[in-house]
Length: 337
Image (cartoon, rainbow, N blue to C red; front, side):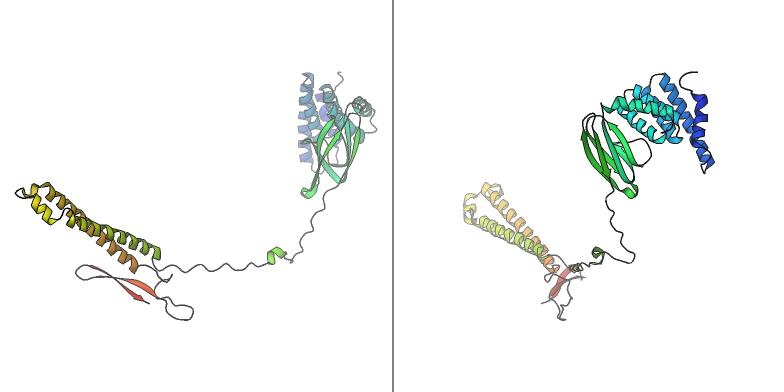
């Protein structure tokens, strides 16, 4: 028989380690089956010299159904794979778990003696029991009040976690052959708020927001003023065009220049063009003026709709449009000032 009693012994050893004390027999039977599969996968990987894969399978088997055989094989696979720190950490766990098993103690002490002078060791005391994560990787084993972890020399991050989401994280740095002892406790939890009590933030009342401004009853005044400005500009341009039409070159000059030429005379045609320009400007000015007048009828001069009253009961000034039909569209305005 080879130095490893493989799959035939695996199920028997793991089942004996679990024992009859488990409450849920069906769940434990499933865990034993999974552990046996992991153990057998570790055996195959070890024979193929895939020591890292073998170690992971043996560790999984030991986690699902703790046994001396699975843990010893995990230590051997880690050591032969060159993972001295992990092998020594597992060896410390094996000494705590099986201090009276001669084969386990002999293997574990040999691995620790080889690693002690080459690695940096931390001894972590937790109150209460905590789980450890070193360099973003969880350590092997269940939460405990004392854990020994071997690390490569240098700086490392160590995080401890407890129930209710509490945790501590620190940085450690050490040289080979040195040991550092850490005592970690969870940060104090904030006292819960008593039932029926209300926090100061919850009870503080902010002043009510100001009421929204009343809806406008018409257009803002600046629209009217814009129309009035455009009307004034057009009026000025129209006046200039009319004066230019009348005086440049003037009626007498056109008649003198166009004797016996009729309407084909250039001066006469220029006069017609100027007259047409003035007529267009006049019509445009009158149209814009009319639109401005309508805008004035729909403008809210008091900031509110017509008919609203002030706080003292006095009616506000305002303008209200009047639309009607009598032989054609009629627009008007009625107001109060």
